[in-house]
Amino acid sequence: MRPYGNLGENGGGIIRTGLGKLKSSLLFRIAIILALLLIPIVLIGNNFYAGGRESLRREISNSMESRVEANIRAMEKEVERIQLLQFELINDEFLNKLAVIPDYMNKFDKSQAILLLQDRLFALKNSSVYISDVSAHIPSIDRTITAMQGAGAMAREQFDATRELARKSPGKAIYVLGGIPYIVLVHEVRDLYEGENALYSIIVELSPNELSKSLSALESSENSGSVLIDPSGEFIVRTHHYENPFLERYIDRYKSGVPGGYEKISSVGKGDDHVLVSSRFSPLLGFSLIHYIPEKSLFNNLYRYQQLFWVLIAVFLVFIIVLCFSLYRMIHRPLLALLQAFRKMEKGDLDVAVAVNSRSEFGYLLQGFNKMSRHLRELIEQVYTHKILVQRAELKQLQSQINPHFLYNSYFSLYNMIAVEDHDSAKQFASQMGSYLRYITRNSTDEVPLYEEAKHAMIYVEIQERRFRLRMKAQFGEVPESYRAVLVPRLILQPLIENAFEHAFDHIEEGGLLAISFEEADDCLLILVEDNGPNLDDERLEKLQRLLETDDSTIETTGLLNIHRRLRLKYGESSGIGVRRSRLGGLEIRLAIWKGEKEHASIADR
Image (cartoon, rainbow, N blue to C red; front, side, top):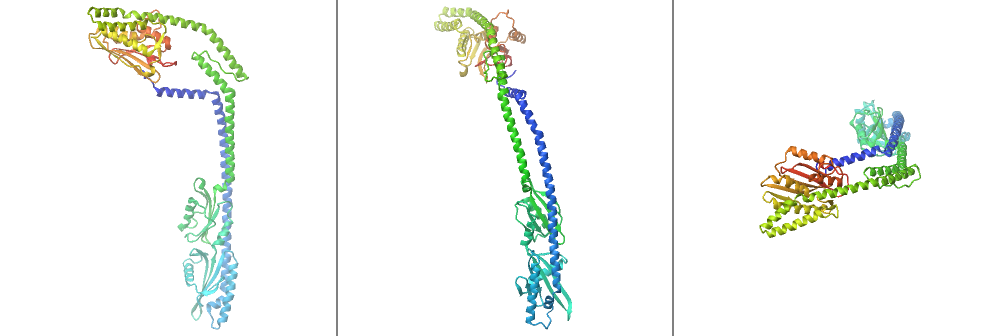
């Protein structure tokens, strides 16, 4: 048996029913078909976008590799040219004179030689935009001659440091000292005269700013940039700083001391931080050139095309929505109105008409339905009215059969009270009998509020308690406030209680118990009449259940059966009363009362 208010199952059933109706809807199917048409369009568009993106990436990658390669080769040629000019200075007459210091040179000759050497150094400085200054360190005269500042005190610290770098890494084109790149040439002529060596160095200082400017030629889009870095990380030139943690980690790899370990074109980063990177290592320069372009800048135009594609998809979706809305107004709404009207007719509501607001084929169809409904209502009305009259006559007949059931014993009890001169009890009993007879003989209406029906049943119980006062006790519950005014058929509780007195308490001497209770559920009020009669066996219970299930009109309609039929006339064929074994051990009779008209579950399922 199912309990009252099983909302889990009912709610799930309602949801499944709603989904089933939605899936079977013609408008829903059309909308699904139109939506499915978007899938190949989206797939084809994404494939075109992915293919175009990959093709553009490949072309840009090839272009980046070519430009990086060309830039680093041009830088190598420039450094080689500077080295050649630097080597030519070794043969400079005035430099050699100053390095050897012949005895015949006086101060004027030395000054003249220094000025002429400065002119040569200045010419070397102007030979390349990469050079910021050229210095000649000459220990023999304890002087450093520069192209920009002329002769000065010997820069001993720079001379020793560059000489040590050249000794440790001979043949290297560029050395880094204090973050500045230098092209170093240390020249030593052994045993030139009297066992002494002639020693000097020519230092070409390269300009980081000019190197940065030359790297700027690689930039082709916003936020693109280049980095020139040596493996030790002492020297690094950047065109500008682009904030990207993935790029910074990539550049940090070149500070590991393993030059050329990452020469390739690659994409680093995640999401919008993706950066396309091309790197080359120059063995001659000892530097690595890294050029990067943010992919967001690369694919700006492609992103715009992608956004345009999604705008077109959105427009197509709007078109589908507008089309579905138009189909809903022109086709689905009239069909839905017609379908709802048919469902009302299935439930017995024949007074139904559909509003006609269209002159199309659907308008003609709806007008035809209204005519059919009106004709059908007129044809059924006569038969229906006749059936109602027959039911009312049967109700009156069943009601009249209830009255004589216990009158004989009641009047006998009243006689005994008078005989023993118990006038107070007789007076009260007579008042109860008067109320009882007034209620059952009143026939102005077939239905009464549940509170009055319960009050009459309680008077009946009190009357019977006087007769069975030594055998049993009765418990009568309260009618819930929300159901007190609900109209129910008259005399539906008394016969159920009467059945217990007749079949349960006639055969016991003491300890009888009768319980009438009202249990409020979500959709109805369940009324239970229980006893603890000892004579209810399974065979008798089964026989009683079969009797309530039969539709044979020839069976005498008294007791439980007449109540069962009256409830069915009131609430429909699925209603009536149900019986089962009580928790007290005897018979339990139950019936349900609903507040309004609705489809009712069978009482057997409650």
